[in-house]
Image (cartoon, rainbow, N blue to C red; front, side, top):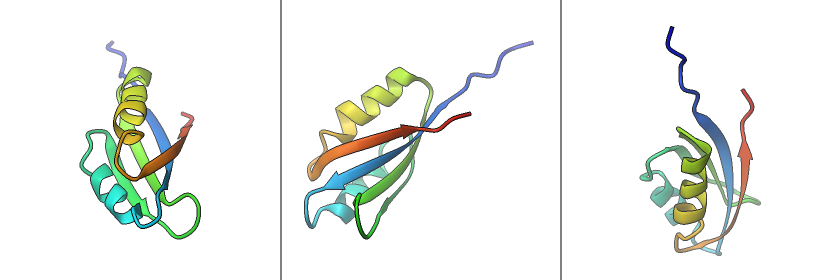
Length: 82
């Protein structure tokens, strides 16, 4: 019997510079692993739901791609429990 590989699912809350929320959400939607991204009223400015194959992939997505996007000030990542 083959074990099913579990994915890592997380909610990434993104604080964007003023006037950048929609642009950040649109750019996020095109990244591999991002299942949905929405600009919102209030704080944080953007909510993203991501699903990747491993913790390492999550690290890369958040720290190397999302945090380095133009307009992103900081992120707060919440890994979903099984």
